[in-house]
Image 1 (cartoon, rainbow, N blue to C red):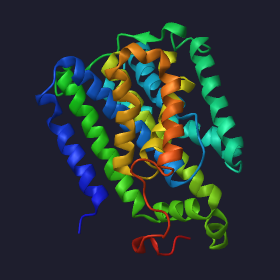
Image 2: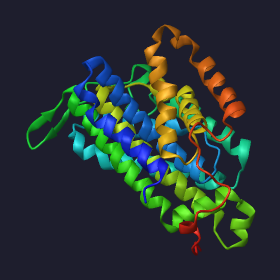
Image 3: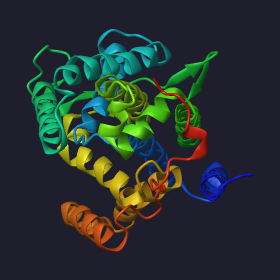
Image 4: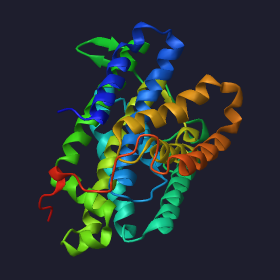
Length: 316
């Protein structure tokens, strides 16, 4: 029998599927970015919501994917489709390289470390350290996707490519939740000490969550660069990381409909009131405070009080 969260998620996906039929190009562009940001937020949720790891540098992985596609296409002339796999693998590699030495840190210590990584990443981009990133202005002139000689260049094409990416991401997360990795993450999130006493390798599964989340964020970054045909450092700064972190807290950790609702609140609503764009930090702060007071586990939370029966299997 289909549970309520699955039903709501399917209804939201059905609405998104028909969305281009009822809006103009401006709203279609906003809808495309909403889908991309939803994918990034879902990848953040793998780390924060499922593995329970405080992490506020996720825009770095998002940016690594975007810049990988931009650099390979603009500087080296690779077709867009040939850049997609590197845009996933490079963020995964850096997730392993940077996080493996610090994965033993907990709470605020790991949070501060990931913020530091994000700041360093932006400095590398802005200073054009390797002569590849275009400095503060970024890179422009990214090609459109070409499939069998046909250019997928319209806003509708962009929207449905992002929609396909969201669908793939939801399938990955669904399979993750039903795998031994997902079961381990649920145990770790519920009680890390108890999980360790059961023989679960805490560091291994937390690192796995980081690597998987980074790869999905990289794919979203590639889609983001294709949509806008350009990338610049400001699109991947700490403010963006704060937004993705807030989406998970406001929407509800480990909740698929919650993440989609959180993305709508934190991205689409500010777009509807663009005259208040300068107050974005204020919006983030108010949203988190109200959520912590009124809905401590998010707008659409997953119940963690008891581990679901389908998760009660050996995880070692």
